[in-house]
Length: 143
Image (spheres, helix red, strand yellow):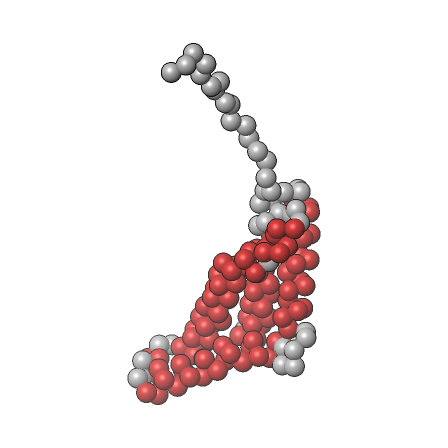
């Protein structure tokens, strides 16, 4: 070895984009804006719009109700089986849409994530809030 050894390098913190960057008010305003925009984009530009998102759980409900009450005769023994079945189908649909959409949401918005500085946590939370809007409308119908 030679007499000159490299000097110890001290590590420094490098600040990158944060999940909640920009403050609470900016975070919640952006979350609301993206959620409402996605909800409008999902339902208002189509021919059937919200009716189709309502028909999917109702059709599944009809099939399961017939299968479990008429064919297997399991549901006929449970009090209020039809109400419980419909309620659980709507809740499961919310969970399925929220988790499936939330997991892939950041990747779907890759171009925005790479080009702009904003709180990254807004993207999956906006998907969950949008599906929560749909759940609210579906629960009105269920009730």
